[in-house]
Structures are given as structure tokens and as C-alpha cells.
Image: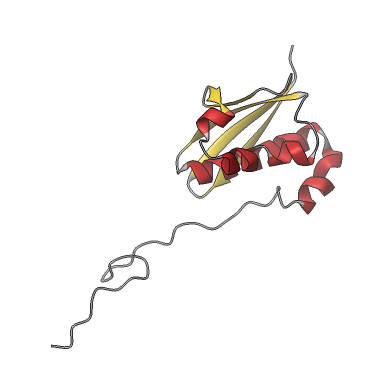
Length: 129
């Protein structure tokens, strides 16, 4: 039986379930290759940052199911999920992942729209007369 480690990551309104399996360094997101799924190189780098920080890019396969939000939020969610799965795999990686800030959930969310306004902070145009 293959040993796998699972981690859940959230960012903005995206939720990612990440599985790490012993393998050859294959990376799949929603059944597609990571570089193909994230068209921008910066987003694919963000997603695999925990694997690079722990230097396990070549001997672990990353399989992620992600839903909700946009591509930037999804990349952040995959990053947090991968970091949590690595932590379950090897507890000694906590210090190296923590120094990179990969174990911290980014709590910034979209601010809600208020009534009587055009958006969260934007007001309707004021007319004196």
C-alpha cells in the first residue's frame, strides 16, 4: 500500500485538498499538470514553494484538488495544503517551513459591500444640488 499524506489549505475563497505520495516529482492540479493549470510561472512557484523549502521536489508527487476563487487564491491554498501535508510526513520540517511563513493561513478576505454605497468603501457620487 502506498503511504500518502493529506493536507488542507485555504486562501481567500479557495479550498485545496493536497495529497503527497512517494514518487518521481509529478505535480497534478485537478487532473492537469501544474504548469499547464497555472498559466503564470509565479503562481506555479507559489504552489510548490513548500516542496522547494524542504528540498523534496524530486521524490514526492503532489496531487491537488482545488475549487473556488481565482488562480492566485488557488495557488496559495495549494501551498498551505502542501506545507501541512509535509508537516504530517515529517515533524522536523516545522522550523524550516515556519521561517518561510508557509504554515500561516493568510486570513485576508474580501470586504463585504455595505448598503447605501457602490462597493465596500466606494461611495455613490455626492451631489450638493
